[in-house]
Image (cartoon, rainbow, N blue to C red):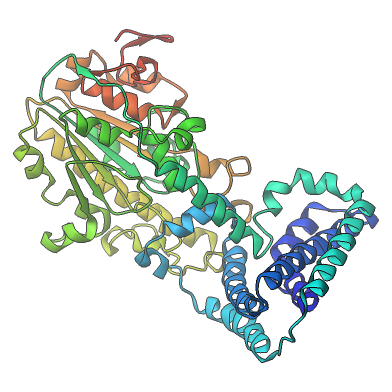
Length: 517
């Protein structure tokens, strides 16, 4: 039975894997066919060994594990074929950090067909199979034979391993069920490491006690290419283009999924030590030093934080009235009064948007912002025309322009108080380029549209005078990154400690690589 199940798994659920191999192995001569055969054998070999190991623990595990695997494989196969995603560690983080409301937008009748034909069908057949008890010595012998055959094939087909090694990162996210099981374990291990007690950063001091308000808007899935502020021919930023918002050049995301990108934005150090060290993040650091931190969220994937006020969009919606309560705009509900009521000399506001998260782009903006038509109204993006998909996405950017523009207008009302706003997206988005949709592609393989992001800054006249900086200075700097946010916010509050790096502070008056702070 184990052999049959292993062969069926290799034959039924590996279409994306074999399609990837066929597309890359253009000339399917003997070498190409041998590579395809090797992939088939490896998948069946690994599955058989895993099932034999489970049977050694308890033969009663075989049937429920296979039924669960069939259902999960069917669902995974639907998303892989519909959106061109890889089920790597990054994507499993996205899956675990998707809330119920966002998951509901992914539903499509075609998913039910996959679950019915490739999930429930094989499961019913498996349920009818009678498993005969097998003695452990025979199971050990079977595992040994499988291992020997698999090893023998690998040795005989050693010429194929150069191609497999070269594409290991891609094919590791395509093999079912091992792509999601192994990468789920990898993600949870990383998350556990990050959840350890955060190491406190060095104590800080303030050069000035002047009242200051800083707003950080964290966008979602916004790609630089679709912002008219960066030269996009469509007018997707009509408000920001006239409000004094400054587009910063050449900004790259450090990751293509929200949880890792948030760590890049909120931590002081480089990505290689973030998860390893579990260091105190910006909002917690500011709150510990007496700054009033207000975090408002219409998203998920946020790390553990210690802030004065944390509010979810659905909680804000309960007290929101009028026509300004849709989606991300609810994050502004009552915000002006909340800032004015604060007794702290320094106030830091974070607005974590739902932004342009797909696939239901048409739901990210109210009907009044459906400027570009027709729009794709399906979550099966490959079935939409490319233009209707772009239209729906651009409408979501247009609504983001409105929300961020309103936040700037709110700050403009605070006369006599130095204020600034930063807007930065967590990552970009694929809209069908190269057959990819959404985001989460491993950084080494991700297209530029998933990595190039908008980074906008607005400064009040009082803030510009206080920090001796102007729009032209900001506009002319190049090569920005998400880890500049931490040091720039510290600079905005005139906050200093051993971790502050003026070279990463966009507000620091600079000449070349030298910053006078």
